[in-house]
Amino acid sequence: MARNPYYQGPPSDHFDGTRFFNPGQPSTDRGLRAVLRWKLAGAAQRWPAAVAVTPARPAQRVDGLRVTMVGHASLLIQAAGVNILTDPVWSPRASPFRAVGPKRVTAPGIAFDDLPRIDAVLLSHGHYDHLDLATLRRLHDRDAPLMAMPLGNDAIVRKAIPQARCVSGDWWDRLPLAEGIATTLTPAYHWSNRWPSDARMMLWSGHYLDTPAGSIWFVGDTGYGDGRIFAEVRERLGSPDAALIPIGAYEPRWFMAAQHVDPAEAVRIMTDVDAGWALGIHWGTFQLTDEAREAPRDGLVAAVAASGLAPDRFVAAEVGGVYDLTRRSR
Image (cartoon, rainbow, N blue to C red; front, side):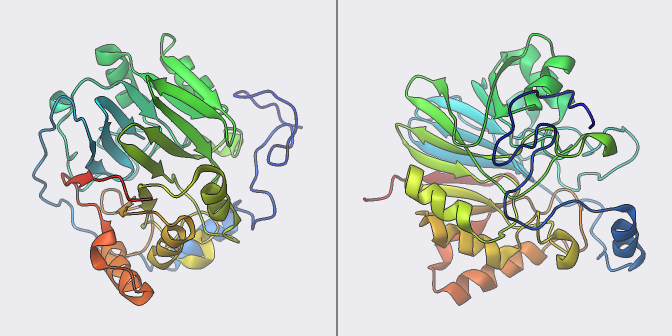
């Protein structure tokens, strides 16, 4: 059996002693034959080389609950005077290489030098479009934020940034971030790796934030599967005031369905947890899959209309967009 270089712990219902897995769900593993079938089909839509962005200049602190879209799964959450980043990527590519790999078509929605002091970073998993060591190193050197993440990802961060302040946990673990603010790691139907040899050796998750200004759930990358985990989030943690739900990187479905939701499934997640409001993320910055750049946004509009939700309850987050949230009435 291969040795796991990131995490050693007892087996569980989602860890076999070496690799993590999604219990009772379709496999996310894809071999070379499947990858070639996808790529040789030639169905990828052409994206623009660049899309104009008007970057936001965020306040230093916000008393309420505000979200600013940086791009892809990178968002600035400002809650009750605390500044939190999710999966921060300011690098030009989502790749271990400088000259190869998905290149961003939108500049970051906040210039790095315009970021307020960052108190905490939430990491969902180890894929390069989510865990960007170059950006984490810049943040550590500037602000030394607390970095919260699922099991095994801390080994990756600490190897690159030995002095990084890391906390890690398993699904459903609650990790304090600041006075009165904590994140609970929530299950997701996904996978993770840094290289072909270490697939599923570090855990993946979402983050459910409890703050004095309201609750906000950063779903992380996920397929829909049987939907059980989303009902469980609502049962265990309650309906969030807001949810940040991925809507992109979903075509072709035969390849992606086990690991990424499409817009219609994103709406199902919102209704499963009864979120007060939702933002569609994980679209329009890096071309990872076959759909056109605007397809997730257009698909979300159609799925929201078909669901009967009010159009403004679930919208696609635009890069540089600023969204003020309110605590829902219970």
